Length: 454
Image (cartoon, rainbow, N blue to C red; front, top):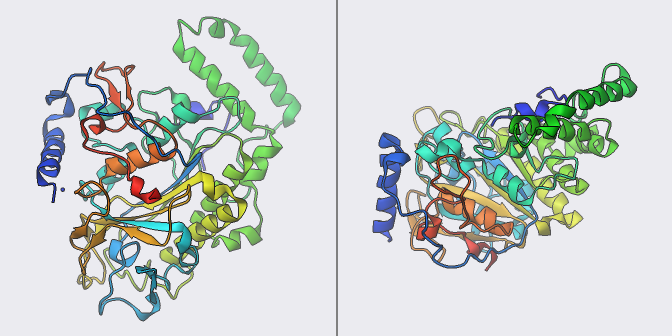
């Protein structure tokens, strides 16, 4: 867990329709070679082809990043074969096959869960793919050097600076894409919760000493604050100090990060479970957080996949811990009424090889994947898209666009769910090129998967 002090926030870092998909594929490839800045692009003055109509069903997002790339045919696009352990107990929910034995708690929530099965990643390289998911664009392209995390855009659009908590909180990691060219105040706030509270929100010499020193700091910084219009760095430092101060000696904040053994057990007694429990508390509190990312891994299962990480018979396996944490979170949010206003999404950066296991009893990298979606009025107990019997290729895309769902479409879906115009082009980027929330969306290349709500 990172150390938190009045300056902590300042240190958080800053493919049918073949013609369309082939064009996009080669564009992404060329950006990797030459960089986006060297490529021709339409004029910045291009106007959106149509007014965006966000679905506007959610107030919050909980995004679960399954780092390492989970096997789609063993999780969200279950395929049965002689390789599959009996303990997986494949069960059909209104025709949607799901691994009830591996994910029993999630299975109990299937009426709230939809599965995207026609999702195809652009790359099968871990870090590149993870960054692509988190910023919704090719990380190697030139403009992506300044691209903010999706959560930072949400912070910019929906954050309430009057509330004590940051709008974007990133759990169980200490690094990743940050606020890009946006103000650092929209950067993720990193926390790895353990139920014992938020560290360093108490001064070692007690509150009186802290209050004295904070007042002195404010006095010393008076001149800097007065010159803030000429010194943006000074203004940012003041913002960080003030934001950090709201977290200290705050009993409402304390309640979020303090939870007992019984609650930890309900959520699976794991780091992932602790993060899911914290995400629930963050939304219950209403103290300002709108986008919560929960990181869980590793899903890079090249060996011993059924005896280790995806062992349905071992409650401590990664798969069962994932189920306990996320399944209980969805259940609790549903019982609270918060799920109606919260979009929950879980995905990795790509999928894994199909059919029988490899020679080390695992699965390797593969360009096909599945995504779990729940909440915010999403119709459950169904799948959007269909792959063939092996999970190799897509038979039915399941949505109005005759092509796979791409990472950028996922990004557009998140924005739309929150009521954010995914066609937005900001004119304040340092390159002066115009920063698109979803690249190429105005050209019609990407759009939200509104079929989740139809």
